[in-house]
Image 1 (cartoon, rainbow, N blue to C red):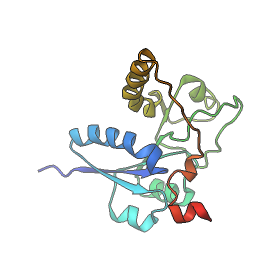
Image 2 (cartoon, rainbow, N blue to C red):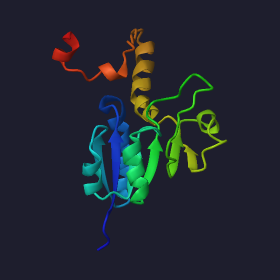
Image 3 (cartoon, helix red, strand yellow):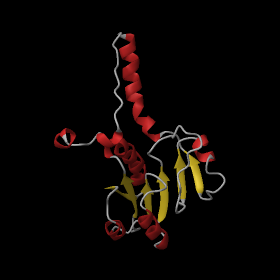
Length: 168
């Protein structure tokens, strides 16, 4: 029997990223891949005990020590951008160690790195947007029924605080 390859997803903000990363993981499982989701504060020792073939990170400047160790151990490094699409057109992330694959939201973001990023780069769109289709249908029917929708923008880092923490 062929041993399954292990892929580890680093989940930066679980409320924002996990649902979509699970969908990507589902498709990898269909390809006979063992998929593991871990928090972004996981220790490098825990990652390497799992013997992954690839580590999927949320941004190119994620934990440099872990990325360097991956490079030494010949573990593929894949970036699936979860931070978003920076509106400042000149903004570039400093990339200390180049990944094997970088997945961008759009061509504009990808093209910013043409001058110095040599790894394989793909544009696969706004992956979290896949979860919005049900919401769009809901909004459409609400409009037809003259129901108003209210959205409230919050800081993502505050979205998972406990009630006790919010009072501090």
